[in-house]
Length: 320
Ligand SMILES: Cc1cc2nc3c(=O)[nH]c(=O)nc-3n(C[C@H](O)[C@H](O)[C@H](O)COP(=O)(O)O)c2cc1C
Image (cartoon, rainbow, N blue to C red; front, side):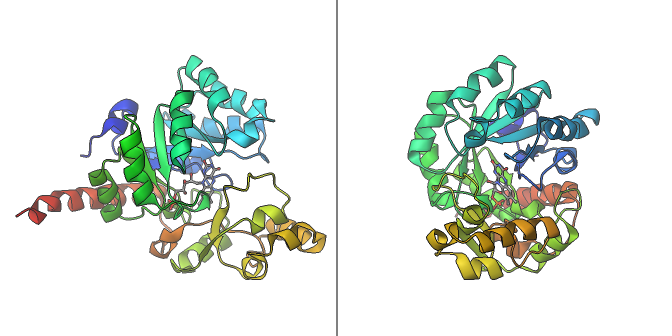
């Protein structure tokens, strides 16, 4: 059994957090992660309603399983209803990422809810600590979805020198060996998104799950093109890592032109509705090449944990 500051704080069987992934990680995926002893999180974005938050949180809660909710700070600024619905659902952990978590920590703490913040820079760490975060998530640019520009391992090592809070590693961790590596480096746990993208409990369509399984690790791109096309107000410092497709091949690097092209913009909006994945984004990280089968999230977390235990047991053999 792997014990860390994270498992002790949240009474987990394994230091694995199922990343909040808007559009993919609903209550069923979170429940499947928690069933394996991890902590599954539900991803909430600006296109969600407070009712969606309540309904998704009820899935793990009604099964007696712990869960978390991932919110976006830049969205909350205009959507206090999402924060209120989250607090009412009483999750064990709430992450407030992609923006200033400052205004949101006190209401969560007042309700007895721990707060995590994903960080991408040194300045982010200082801001999260000043805001009163309980857990820091060092999110490297290998990650799927929106992320920063620094790689996981150097970012993790630097964050560990900056804070005494538990630091969880996110971005590119998809095997027991990878999990063991970041735990050995000092992380208190792992925060995995991409390894869960082909799980049937997720909200991804069967077509999206098939794309994920077919993609190689080289076939992702960190781009703002999908946000610009959808006229989303995502702050520009967080582009999104998605599978390369026809749309990204055409428009990545031409975002200014795209901002003026309403036809191309409409094509992405329509493609999202019709699940046309040549034009719509499939957010996925660099570890996507390791996701080759459709498996339950419970099995993914169990195998990851067993693999990490094996890898950690082998470490003493390296010492002369
Ligand atoms: C499809 C997808 C959607 C995501 N949505 C969110 C989100 O809503 N909120 C959030 O804080 N992070 C989101 N992320 C980022 C994850 O929280 C996490 O940092 C990332 O998945 C970890 O790296 P990995 O994908 O290499 O495992 C998303 C990631 C993916 C792949």
